Image 1 (cartoon, rainbow, N blue to C red):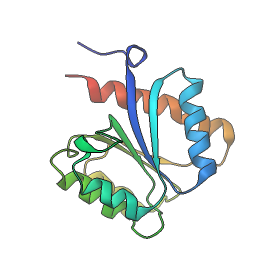
Image 2 (spheres, rainbow, N blue to C red):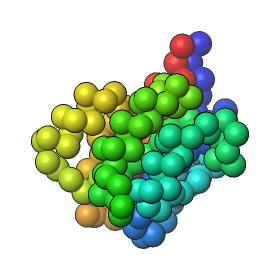
Image 3 (cartoon, rainbow, N blue to C red):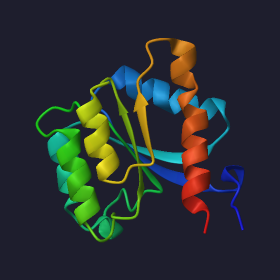
Image 4 (cartoon, rainbow, N blue to C red):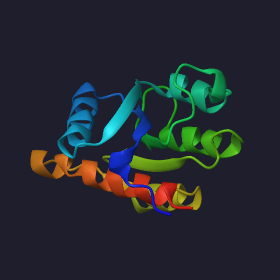
Length: 145
């Protein structure tokens, strides 16, 4: 049975240090009418602490989707992704990378760690706002039994 993304409220954790990108990401989700709770972590240290903790007992909880920038202050996104995959509470969480990096080695490393999508941040506003559709698709696929 497939769950329609419109029928649920999704918990999304965005790890992003750029306030403008966080704002546009929220707008992209609102435009498509997705029902969501969005938590934002703005630096690598905080994200790594979350990834290494027991999120069941945190205010953020276990997200349905983690959207992770690779270029963060203090701790790189790939290190955070590794910690997520090593945490039994988070290992199965869908992860989308949303980054400015087009480097093949970044894409390959993240793919090897089991991501749902690798999204290069578009420079065009309309293209950026289409990220909401990608997120909706990832959530639908992650909820398929």
